[in-house]
Image (cartoon, rainbow, N blue to C red):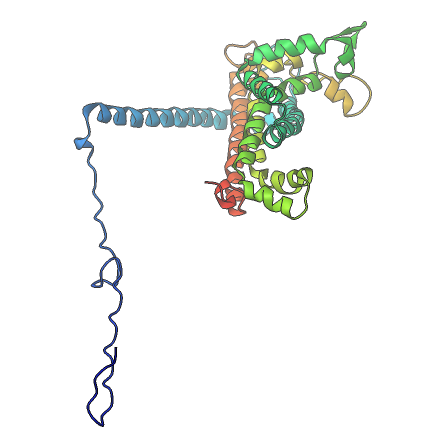
Length: 350
């Protein structure tokens, strides 16, 4: 359509086009008004909801009070009776433990049995979790392994100890413990550590499986696109990504091992001192018997026969410090994993 012009004049300029309006209006440059936050009052809830809310708060506060009470009581008793010589001296084989040395041997036994148990449990748990998540064929075998680990997690420690004693008393396992007159006793750090690994295995397995399942599929597809095989992807991509999960499960498992007593009594002998067996250095300690801080605490508690409750409180305080250190390590590992991007959200899982 032509614009009319005056004779001998120029065409007038066209009017400017109107600017498009934003969806939120033009008064505030397209910004929608902020909604006011409504402070919901508990008084507006139904009576049953208010009762449930109060009960949940009460349950949480009660658990905190119980935990703080245990820590405060053990700290008070432990600091009161703990002396450096108790940690640096070994006990003597005496019924009355009130004046018979410290608990160096039980402390070393706790560290040794914890290391043996977690060293056996960790590779088995990682292998089982990796196979179930990444392969899982045949399905019936994967379900069988998963159910078996759940059964182990729910089995009482004393049942595991009795099963281990029957198993390790067979002649085929004679190299793991001390023998006398052709009889295999089945008691040693090796046998007790093997039984302890069953306690830690479900925790490492669950943590590893959860970490592998949380890794998104595109991480695996990117590795395959670069020419990596499935085995190389598992070894170089997936397992390094779940280091924090594995470490968390291992630390929790070590805490369970350090605090167990039934397996120590049945498979280790719960003796006061380390009793090596054999002439090979190092191996003789592993094949010998001994005790841990848990058995030492029981023997010297008012319920035991050691007649040294002061030493029991001191040893219990040291054991509590070990467990707290392991729990602190779990939190530290989780935080370091978050900083390095090993947690699931940084990998893209939602």
